[in-house]
Length: 214
Ligand code: SAH
Image (cartoon, rainbow, N blue to C red; front, side, top):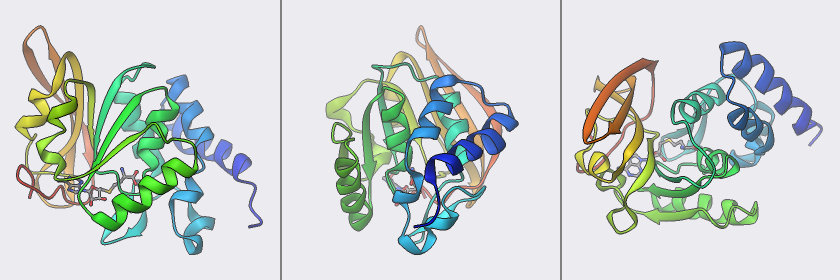
């Protein structure tokens, strides 16, 4: 295709992410590195670096670049940390976390999305990202605990198994809303046995479906 992905990515990082106050160098570097256009259908590739989410099929979306950066930044990921993502979708957020040096475990409930993301991540040499087809509201108990947990779909509350599987200290980020498609981004911090919740602003995610979801 005629676009120069690296230049467009750099522009995306400057205008959409840094301009909105995100300064974590690892987040900026990862967002400037992962080839986002490969995580959407060919017909949408020219829009891949625009300031909005895009459909990935099965009624699901790849989040707006800024939202991926915002969540990655709230998560305070250090290299080597074990991170659980719920909602693999296209695999883009998982690739960003991997690029930040995280040891990524990601769970998706829609089989064709799981299969496609798994293959793409391997093709792009993110083969060390662990993928699973399951209801992610149950977490990934065999691999727990996790230093960080990120949910990229919106649920009615914080799924209890995810809090249980969070390390101490640990950070969990999840969109929570009493109605669908409109949530508050919630940061759950666990520290010395105490669990704290902080609201981080309004977001609009697709539904978290499952035992502890909708
Ligand atoms: N992180 C993704 C965006 C995903 S959209 C990306 O970077 O592309 C949300 C995803 O969460 C969808 O693929 C949806 O199928 C998935 N999902 C919803 N409920 C889930 C659940 N209980 N367990 C696992 N995945 C779930």
